[in-house]
Image (spheres, rainbow, N blue to C red):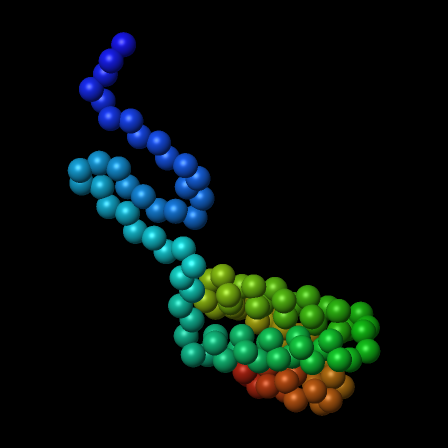
Amino acid sequence: MATDEPNVSIGDVSHSTFAIGSHAHAESHHGTAVPRDPAAEELLKAVRELRADLTRMRASEETAALDTALAETEDEITSTGQAGPSRLDRLRQLLHDSQALVGLVASAGAVAGLLGM
């Protein structure tokens, strides 16, 4: 049985963008960063510095809770371009509860300052 239809074969299309048809349009945004305003960018940098500093401190429940909140904040800023108000309130509370830590680590003071503490 012969046919005049062309054969089309599509292999692995993961992480690909394509369009089919005479008026089709394909646009790819794979690997593009979420835009962040300067304040979110500054907070992200400070959060990363504080997380790095926490690894050099003696582990405690307090530092573990703070690191978890910082990791969640980092993920949220990276994926959405900002940290929501409830996330920022949680960080403020943890930093407030960790005043001794804030006094010892300059990066904690930087994050606290960016949160308006």
